[in-house]
Amino acid sequence: MEWFGATEYWTSRLVFQKGLAALYLVAFLAAALQFRALVGERGMLPVPRFVARVPARRSPSLFHLHYSDRFFAGCAWTGCAVAAALLAGADSLVPLWAAILLWLVPWALYLSIVNVGQTWYAFGWESLLLEVGFLGVFLGNDEVAPPVVVLFLLRWVLFRVEFGAGLIKMRGDECWRRLTCLDHHHETQPMPGPLSWFFHRLPKPLHRVETAANHVTQLVVPFLLFAPQPVASAAAALMIVTQLWLVLSGNFAWLNWITVVLALPAVAWPSDPPPVGDAPLWYVVVVLAVSALLLALSHAPVRNMLSRRQVMNRSFDPLHLVNTYGAFGTVSRVRHEVVLEGTADETPREDSEWREYEFKGKPGDPRRWPRQFAPYHLRLDWLMWFAALSPAYASPWFGGLVERLLENDPDTLRLLRRSPFPADAPPRHIRARLFRYRFTTWRELRETGACWERTCVREFFPPTRLAGSTRKS
Image (cartoon, helix red, strand yellow):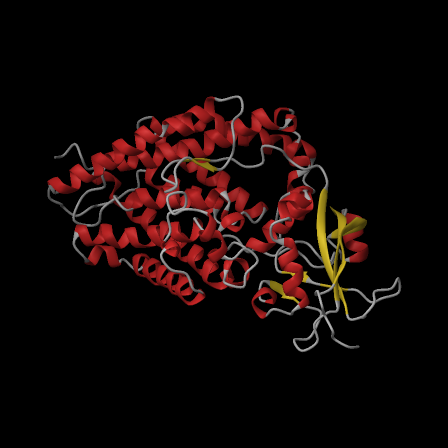
């Protein structure tokens, strides 16, 4: 069945699988290190409470069968181990059927995590990892050539990622049409990186070029993915360059990296593949059946892309097999940040000493320069950005965060860069204030050494203490 496999994409499959395994490893590591404070038994949005009210048919997950923090940790660390094994090439050491099962393990485990992760896992790159990971299950190993139909479906996903994102921008905020969004975006994006200050200070004409280039890459180039080689390779390479530019300009978890990985199979890499036999009939049948299912399900994201009411980052089935993507349909012109503070005073006064909590990634101390965390995902930091946009985004979990800070909860404090209170002396009260942040100018940076300038706007959360607290000063 020579028509079924594409031997010339042998290296393309190899680099794609290595990249996918690496991203799985990052995703499972983030889950293992952060879940207790977020969704654990004593977390802000506990899994047991979620599975008690949401049926398994709406959120298929192993945790509907059983949940404990130990079991969740076991699933996350098992995912890390399997991803590391795949990264090392374990799938090439086993028969084809075993390789398929091996790739199915991280997909099923991560699906179980995402489907109970609630708002902490409501990001487009979670569904994208699952959709791409499901396709990765059927790419095969060294026994067979990469299936042409799976390679096509990977390009189809990449097309929807880029073209959908381009459409949502053109339909969303007029600044994308006027080429002015990047006058603000580098400053107001969820989590700036170490170079974001410099990107923001680029001349405005260059920002216009950036925006126009983005439109070309997302609205024109995706169609070239389906052109003959070497045009398809050039289109994929241009998308990779664009994504690496975004990697330099900010922290977007693994969104940019998975898009890069997704573009790799479209590139015809120079290779000298070993000879392989025909694909087994059972494998051909499985791949064609799965491909037909995915193409049939694709009508939902296509209909969404064509709709004037296009939505971003939505799954159309509980297994996240096909999804719609997009980012920054609107761009904030002003950056606000929620700053959490605590005091040891039994009764807060105007002259009380309020000490600020420092987060790992989100802006806080104006003199602290942003750091690079992507592809690692700091979930609490990202949700704090949404909280600053509107308190409604934070209503399900913000009170729980405050309560755990008042308790000096170790799992919660591990999500932060630094707590201003010792472990044996938690704060008496916690408050939150909303600040307006802006990047300093070149002159301000030289004079003060601060990359941010901030101004208090209003109270976000009033001083609060634990109910029934009897601690004495």
